[in-house]
Image (cartoon, rainbow, N blue to C red; front, side, top):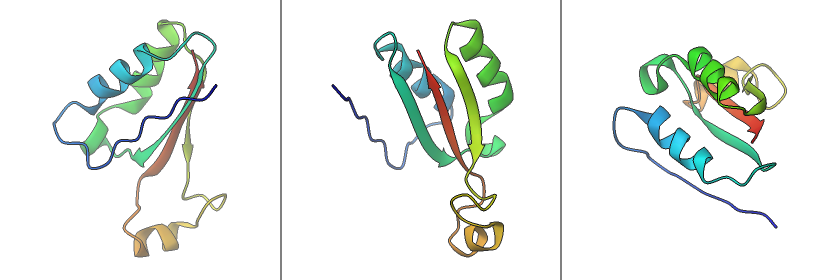
Length: 92
């Protein structure tokens, strides 16, 4: 069984709170992949957020830069307005 949550144009200052609530309802063993422009200005300190998730028991949590050539290059990201494009992935 797969569950999907799709957010678009998230308003508000504390997007980490929204992520925590989204992950709270994820079933044990469930995987997540969240993609957004995760700049510090938009999401705050994501390295500290990763550590928080790990401390709460989430596993294999990592940030994947999607502008390093695996998905698109940095120049393409800039042209498309996708600077800071990042995947947050892990498992509960």
